[in-house]
Length: 340
Image (cartoon, rainbow, N blue to C red):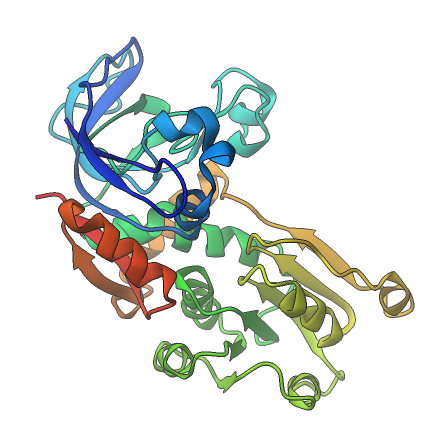
């Protein structure tokens, strides 16, 4: 089969790979669409020594396609079904965490694109429990966004503790941050969206952000604090992973507020003295729970939210280098691959 490997130092090699084996309980998916996630860019940029044995693992976790063979024992997913990989952390399926849909906590989990061959290969094999049938009302393009970015934003918002009608600050307007803007507006929250890139701020505004600001100016945090009569926002979603943005997020919170860390970055600048009196909370949010994925899918299916504006250019897998460069340069929109 056709697939891409990341050997290190921002190289992507398109090569022929063995057809994957399908074990009991697995389904084999022939991709129709996939995308580039920020995690993919981290892996792509790693040195060869950091890649190590993972250099031989097909990267990527945003899997959308049709089931072409199945060794399922339940019949929940059948050959011909259009499916999306609904968890990139594939749990053991037996532990208490897996039973409650928290596969990211599973001690025996395997991660698509890191431990299991992922979505930069035309055929992907995963346990049946790791996929969800896509309803006809959801396009392949939307399902790619749902596979990671949209469901990640949905899960993060569940941790934000901002009641209906309150104010949310979203820092970093990549696909996760933009998804958070769309979801927060659906929930009825006011949204202030922050990003250094003007075109991203414009896109956030078109998706429903009430205010957009560039970070960095000495007064920008105070501007955000003054948007709420309580002297700060009740919740911040930090989606960039930048240390300065994480620190800024704390400074714009109202007393009792919560900052949700979503973006992956080099490290956190923690000012515990500043946090004590106003009793600020920092919490982290990774991949969504199974039931959260189902909720986000239902929103798409009943057209409660519109995400087409988040989606960017589409590439062929043969142009993977161009696609990765486009995403790495901070261009607008979710980068997609069309495998058809």
